[in-house]
Amino acid sequence: MSTTRPTTSGAGRPQADLPGELLASVVRRNSAAPLLTAYDDATGDRVELSAATLANWVAKTANLFQAEFDIAPGSTVAVALPVHWQTAAVLLAAWSCGAAVLDTAAEDDDRLAGSDLVLADRDRLPALEDALAQGAGGELLGLSLHPLGLGMTDYVGPARDFALEVRAQGDFFAPWQPPDPAAPGLVTGGLTLDLGGLVPAAGELATRLGIRPDDRVLVDADTAAEAGPVAWLLAPLVAGASTVLVRNPAPEGLPHRAETERVTATLGVRIDGIRMLGAPG
Image 1 (cartoon, rainbow, N blue to C red):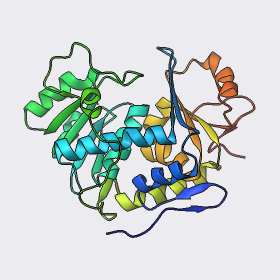
Image 2: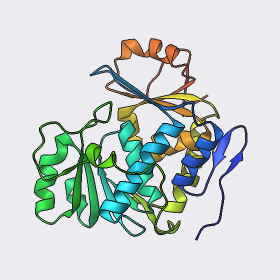
Image 3: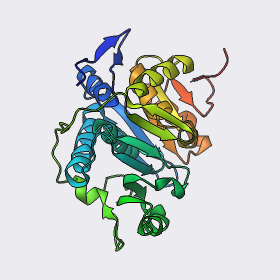
């Protein structure tokens, strides 16, 4: 069992060995400040989560995974979801259980073999239902990705509805088995990262990109999907930054968005007068 405790290193930069510990350290640092603000310019939706709110979603989701699907160290959770605030909760919940995340956001359904649980947005459910019926993976949870976390209206397929299932879960999570840092934590493309390697990898990436403590980082969802969850989710958390996540961005509105959200840096989009992460100079 790991006996390490999260600490803070540098000016407000939380440090922890595992992703679940990382979020807990962020909550202790400032639970009420905005941590993840999500926009979808195609629908006009805006959702803002504080560290405490995101942690509550993570706890409920982890309890759902553990109690209803027996997700624990050694399990594999396939995440067939776009970059979204609910995806952040799903990823952190799986890691809190000690499970490996199989990132299938690139719509490669053939990679589901051996997974214990598959989470997918409603648009992908028909193809996944067929794949799972042929024994390609475990149980299926569907997400509506509704901005208020509502369920999948009028859905009649075999997938269980994440929004309905998660509501009844407890607000505090304690794993039945302690996560194993040496176990797989993320499988994406041809890369596998150990659970205990995720936070260090995110810290190295945050340093390389130049994310600063208390940065407010505007992230383009397409760039985030290509870069993966270590970049769009964990690196800002490690750095002590907050994120403004924009799906389907309307370029003409981004300067005003950046001003109103007090954005200090961007990832995947260039806005005049604002530092672009990873850019030369």
